Image (cartoon, rainbow, N blue to C red; front, side, top):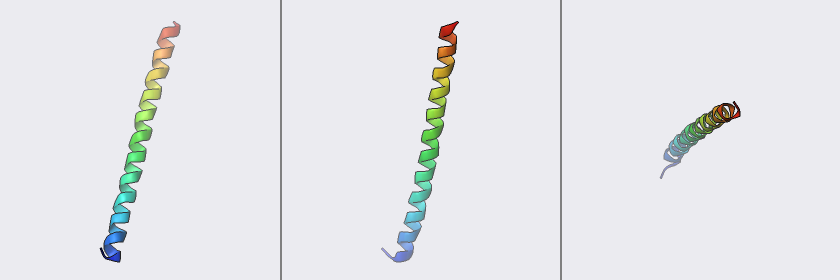
Length: 44
């Protein structure tokens, strides 16, 4: 593997990692929102 190929792979993996982090944060936010809504309904 050449240095250029390694740089390209590194850039790809960094982009993939950023995407997965954002996806995980979105999923966690949706779960948190669902729990908050559920708790609000159960208090009534």
